[in-house]
Picture 1 (cartoon, helix red, strand yellow):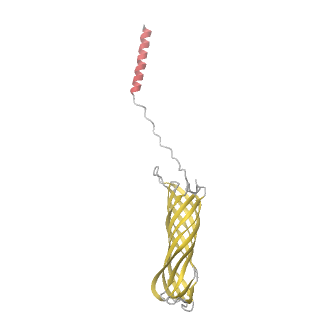
Picture 2: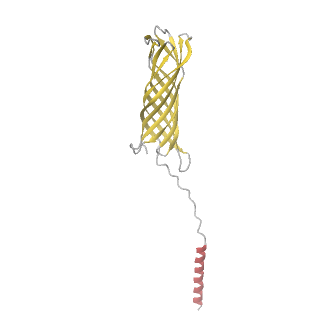
Length: 258
């Protein structure tokens, strides 16, 4: 009888413990921060680009004697426009993200260099004689910085040093159009540039690694003295102060693109 009573008490205790356990709240869960997952893309690497575009230049000009006295003392502004082709390359490095959660643009910095083949035609003159002046080439080297929004879009600003070449020009009469026998020689001028643009992925239209770039640049050059030779304008000098703006579109190929 005692054994039966003890067994009954043990069973009641077990049942009470089970009921109490069922009524207790669940044990608290230990929170663990999600693991940081590296982006599945990387903008670091070398690239090549080629394309074309449109450009224009404006130049303040003034005619001087070899001694420095102005002949046509009024400053005149002339300009030209036309098309260009461009080739270049560079290297980009993905620094890291801005820490903005799922929407986490990557900071990208890089170096660049390119060369333009140009035909930007314009006119300079002094009121009684004029000449066609054509910008024929330009180079640039510098750096850029921007934000990559995922693997498909990169927007950036760039800047650096640039140089441009203007071809020789022969003067004609503004009245008759007859050649005057006066001309300038071709010359190079160096300056600086600022610009910016975007690159967008062309996948799946083209294989992985191809991007389309659209870019604007502003090139500034200080005044250069351009000698004029000939009997009509003997020992004259044109003060030539150009500013160049270009818009271009290029196909970019990034090596080892992930």
